[in-house]
Length: 248
Image (cartoon, rainbow, N blue to C red; front, side, top):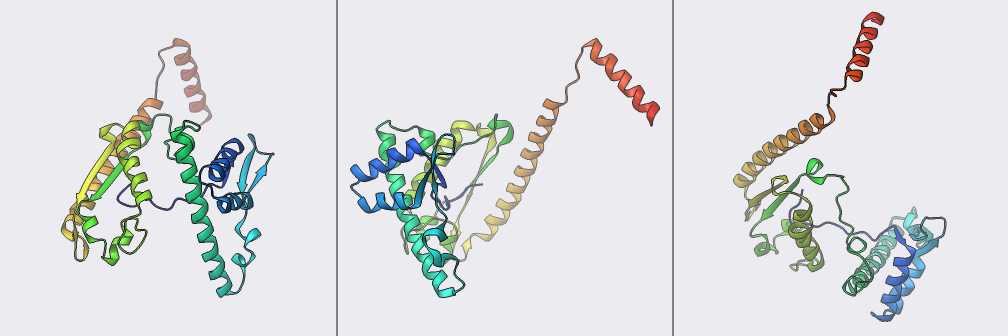
């Protein structure tokens, strides 16, 4: 279920060693960011027990002890410190990954963690897209922050917008058939989403979700329920039924 928010992008808890070394080298040499490289060294430690070896993100409290303090003020300050560090690490890793991707040094999966793991996505996955067509004209509305990623008062988070657009228009259509993708359009009003349209949207969404899920479950059940035509199988099945009848 997607609309206008891409959501938070936490830094990875674990990065393959070969990939981490490449990203760190890019941060240091290409982006010329010694401080960012030092942050990566401080917060990620090599774990050779992983297969393959990987750099693992350290516990926050191991570097910022007050993160688990009993003092509320200390916790707030530690939380602010971690958010700043987290944002800095996230930004430098993404910039380095984009540089490496453009150079062909890393693969698309390395760059973009979005993937559908189902063996047959179209048999197991549905996508519902809600578009508020005029939301960008109301960025000053306080309620808008709940519906779209905003980096400052009235400025859209461009990175999130780019990732979301790519997800909606490139990645999802590449793996899902059109009949597995449902789209809805709404408008914004002075009180938020237009109430009448929202009511109609909810009803339509409920119906689509119920019907599509039921069809997928039915197809999945039918694909697993097969009766063989082998004579030996029939004979064994008959014996099994007789045994169950007599035992009962």
